[in-house]
Image 1: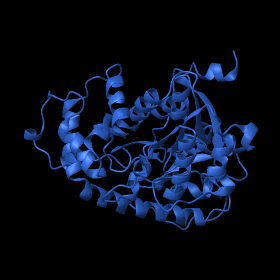
Image 2: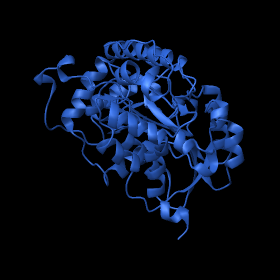
Image 3: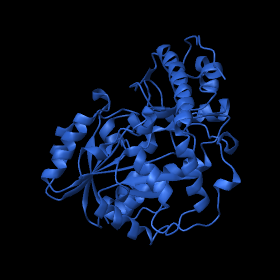
Image 4: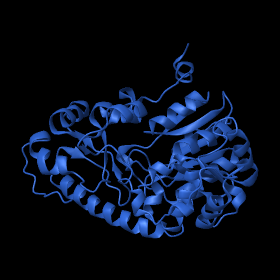
Length: 381
């Protein structure tokens, strides 16, 4: 059995298992979504809720709210349990076993593992550190073949947080169109632009399918309010396929999602203030370090620093065991040593989302963990 065949038999995500069993810590910099909003912070009453309702293929008020938010027809909207399941449903509808897809590298491990699970033949295109992790359409074109059925990207890029602009996406869309392929874009972090009318690749052509959710940007992970935008025929196929997977969603969650969408402007304002403050703290911290290399996005909640002279595995272990701080080791973002030198050992994902960002890393650990240079920052609540 060759490596591709072996990977196609994947039955679990190593990263998700680690996230659920090993990422918790007093100072958690491994979770990339905003701190969870409490139910009491939503303006909701029992009159807004029901345990059971007539949803059929989507709860109409939720479908309408999402369609209004994106200014699209309701026939283009498919709801799903978070972005993770939206990706699962979209990929399952778009490819058959043995189909060739082209997926970015470094990549979000559950997305890569899902493609193997569904039996795809996965080819890669690189997003190098030296190019700021930007997407190069020429690199995509170089790796495409007549068999390529789907191009898969994340925007913002997971794990680096780098934004892909519309001009680049248009070029990718044209490449896909010429080969009768499609482009799947996971836009869950793009919500962190906090635009009243969300920016989306779906507006760039029918070859684009996008996934997203309320999970990361708004602290609403528990609602599991995810969605897919696709042209109507494809969206209908996804609804039918979903009957084999989830069939009927949690109705109380659908109703709460409608409530949250009505209040999203105020929720977004608070989230943006928190992220902007925390990103400033993180950048000030990085300014003091000559032992970390980092592409610094202007938006979002994640960065992907590289340790210059040490193993990130050693650093991550020390942070967790001695200083109660959790960050994500770079090995979960599919950076094989054969292609990226020591990246697998030297990179890590860092989130800047919580209300006490860097309490561990800035207030207590910096001087002891990453070298003798003084840390001049004071963590804020």
